[in-house]
Length: 197
Image (cartoon, rainbow, N blue to C red; front, side, top):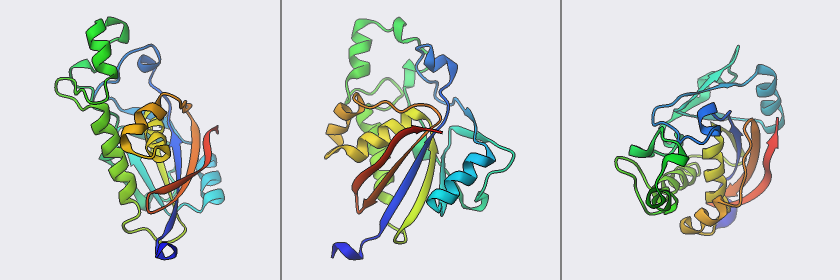
């Protein structure tokens, strides 16, 4: 039965990280990241990977003179950053000890936000849905923030969704980097992880 299932490849492109996040602030809910994605780099990805569809996180705005495969771009809400609720926009240093413990607890949902568990479950469900209508040997380009690429990578590498939290803390995904995974029905292989442009 396994040979009849499609093999897909995902090329994950990490955008820039906003300055306030690099300075230790929790991302705001509706923060849009401007991401300069040059035509030359796009052409390189298309040539090397034979991209058929592009999924762009809804909180990323691609700044480019031209976006290739424009007719095949899906603006994807499920690839947006985690909803931090009442913690959004706050400095990590301003959190009390109790708030820091809750922030790191995978099952805790901040007021008006989502837990790390819910965040990972959302991303894993979206990844699994890629196989539903995929053609064999199809390649998808996913443009999202490094935080999302890191979480997607953890979900791909983990045996179960609960193990993805442990793996998350062992991964670094650099801004303006790319990763490649291939998979069949949820079983994934790492081909490239966080290679700079």
